[in-house]
Amino acid sequence: MDNTVIAVIGAGNIGSRHLQGLAYGMRPYEIHIVEPLEPATAVSKERMRDAIAVSCKDNMSCYWHHRIPDHLAERNRLADPREGHAGDPDDSGRS
Image (cartoon, rainbow, N blue to C red; front, side, top):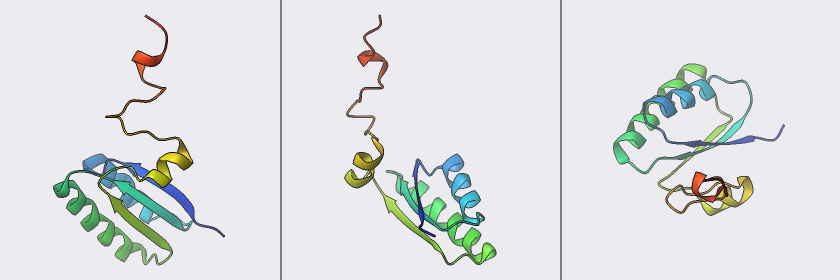
């Protein structure tokens, strides 16, 4: 079975809890975590280490990034919110 690729944008309190939940999942995951703030990155890494140790999961790969990597943005049509994208309210064409 191929790994499911997941992107978690924001790994603060809520995002790191989502990561913990993924650690208990049954499927193999390739997780890309995007978090620009080092304190939140440190907390999320610690929570993931603890959750993976409890679940004895060895089929998960985690990659931390400070910004959305180009390969994920292109693959999933993600955009850096600082750069704007077609889904922004200002680009909707409505007033």
